[in-house]
Length: 283
Ligand SMILES: [Zn+2]
Image (cartoon, rainbow, N blue to C red; front, side):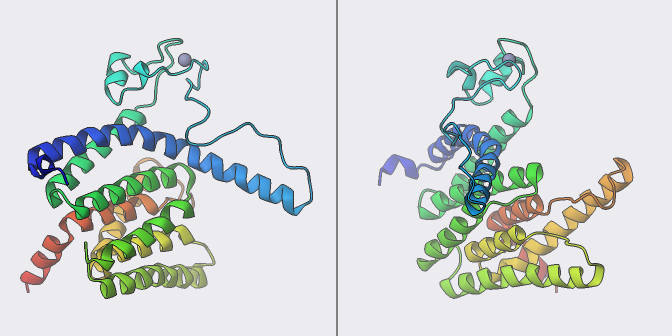
């Protein structure tokens, strides 16, 4: 492996820069993956009903090229530089001046900062590269869940397998803690779901949440699950109460749990050991 990457400052800077461009790609994933899934479901439903498959133009993460949703102007490479283009264009389409969502530079910056931190925290090696994949997937999942109340299996399941695979070599936890973590993560939320459902007759969360916590358990080991659940519930409850009180968000409007789980997962990956140590140390 190249020796210059061992320099922490250089490695951190490179990871931050890479994060900017990955963030730009994550914007595409967040926007298109749910639409790709919906097309797939329509195609499957048509097949089951023996109807002709709906005629569709190619639609995936690479095709078609991005356009302004307002005027259809094709986004050029120069208009697609993460954060920089947004600032240069002052947040507006160059062709029709329609405002560009602030979400795009926010996702790019968030990805850059967390990627840089992952590189700094772990230092050059397999653990840092894995942490990048973990953080990127968490960002995609959090925003997709926020938009659509979905946590796609084609993100949560590969994440789970990758966590188990990396822990074969003990990258973040030993393999038995990792396997138990995957099982316990799934079962913990599955039980909450069924208790809530039996008690209230409503669905409090979705199966995607169980798979996401299973993946977090597979990566970090079962020891990190209490902290992850505690943190995501506290922040989720605070935001939920805030929304109901201040934004008059209806009590029955679903609030996605995935973004809090994802945030708690990232927190636990970086500071879980420290936080658990502090907690245990106070007794
Ligand atoms: Zn436009």
